[in-house]
Image (cartoon, rainbow, N blue to C red; front, side):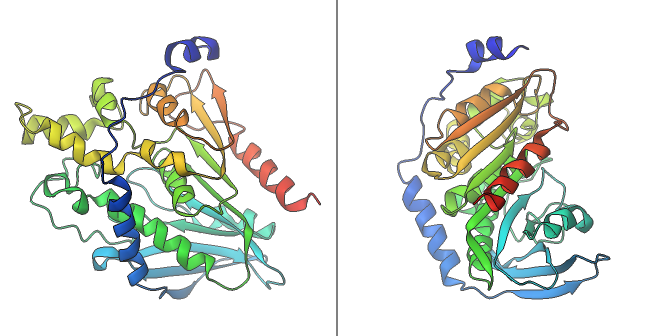
Length: 322
């Protein structure tokens, strides 16, 4: 699909605003829960074969008493404050190979990569729920109310992680960035919501948005397929459809992004049907800070060429232009 056609078709899309009336107080309460946990964490040196970088396993105890893990890769022989890149992975996967972060360390940047609880890395999922997961984490805890949603806990892990990292020694608080694709793209935006000092957010085709519309858009062939599975197996007559979606509204990224202060650089593949461009446009249109959307007409939910080079250029110019 051409950029002009995509903009004409979806470019003005705004979802019907169903932001919960207590959304702000709900998340304020969550932040207070995190703050009560303090800033305790544990660093364990991780073997890394590099002449320029060193690595550490970072562990902290998050909400619901879960042990949460992140990778830290930073320059060796630190002599000045380090810029930070918060990096987030895609759905069901993990923080990836340690060696992938060495290039950032060579440029003097500390990378911190969160492992989302209960997914492919070692972070624990301590959710207790009467419902099933049915192939996904969007619906984990949905039958027990918004306080039990797994993504509520995962979002609060991000808040806790930013608090821990920004209180470490030799962190350059004026040069912090966030990056991710798909689920990671959504979590990078959540990171910008919780930490307003993030300078730039780089996001590719972010997930976790506008769930009612996602349900209507060929849901079983998308990243949102578990919504359909939940109805099929847990609520076949849709008797609880309203409360189901009202619960998910608490983790919908469209309601977080208006508070972002960071510049947002957004990559979108116009053939993406895993995270549909219509959903992405709806979230993008809700962002009030400086933003730019980069269009890739022939690309879907896949590797996007040039985006990582654009990100590196932006960071390089920030850090090396007087």
